[in-house]
Amino acid sequence: MATSPTLRPARPADVDAVAGVFHRGWHDAHPGLVPDGLTERRTPESFLERVTRRVAETEETTVAEVDGRIAGFIMVHDDEAEQVYVDRDFRGTGVAALLLTEAERQIAAAGHEVAWLAVVRGNERAQAFYAKQGWVDDGDVDYHVTALGEQFVSPCRRLVKPVL
Image (cartoon, rainbow, N blue to C red):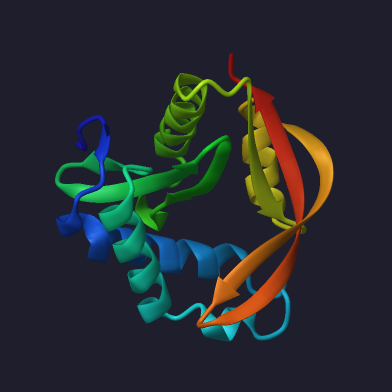
């Protein structure tokens, strides 16, 4: 039986595992919903580079660890819950809700009254999860992303939640 998840800041030793969760999770949810060309640029190496940079430069990445495995992670930047991903093996176990609650806590602790996040249009599973957690759809937002040096605009929904 698995133990309860432990939340902690990501460390350099976690980069490979976090990048793997990120790559698999992104490809589970985004193909067919994002601009042409973006999916092909979301390679394992692109996620590894991004996670390496984020873990080294900031303290904005938090992991959930279960029995020595990275079960999921969040990346928080200012008032945005920028990334919320859970490994396939841990979906439906409560890890996502735990991580999202931690993102909300971090955003509130930084003095923000409202947290926000972007969900690609058409990702119904994620939108339903966030709604269940009390997040409200605030309308369309064009989310600008860079992948392998190329800029893309991804059509998303902006979700918000008061945290203070």
